[in-house]
Image (cartoon, rainbow, N blue to C red; front, side):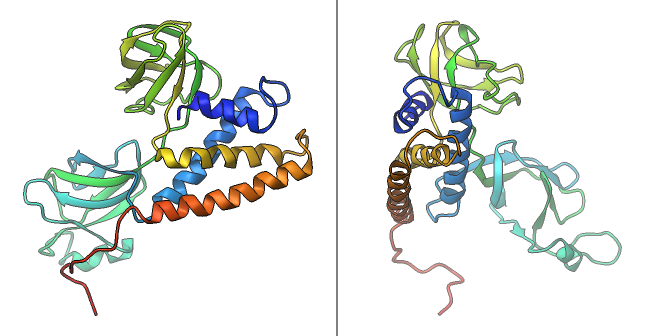
Length: 276
């Protein structure tokens, strides 16, 4: 479900088909807050829904994490396949070190340093493969500020993020205007809000990005945003309607959680290191 459709359903839930009490910007912020909340839950379930891999090359033992990395999961040398274990604490880095600053533990370890990771071996520059959980980009919808062949400029609506590469690999649907009914993917994105795409668009193009979360969670996002909007002190719907939405939200949370938890069936094999 694209962001435009989600916004329309949210408006229907709060009984405001067109902007009056709630602006589109206000509701999109609530939808993105809801997506962030659902993404956090999805990331903590066993299905590894948000897992991605990337090639990384250390510079003087330091690996810069990809811009969309929310949490590193697993690291290994690309050529040898040797795993690089995580150190549970920065204080353990000295355990692997011999006298002075030489690193020679006989095996590879790494520890996080803010937006980087450091491999616990001196001058380490071997190419590695990193598996990590992605940071889910905010939703965006509206009328393009501009467009051309292979280009679409997101609207300057205080919702579209102005960070280079932020919307890379995000898919969107065209609702109306030039490119109607098209589905496209952003291959590059600039801080000026210009997306590189495959289609042709212009300032009549109305679009909605599609969340990277599983489609089965999209209704939960809408309901989370609905309840958030209805808890605003100046909300127009009556208390009974709000309570009904709260009850529905509780049930949907349980259903979605049960569905997420069952992505990986019970295994029927033993891995090295299993203990009994």
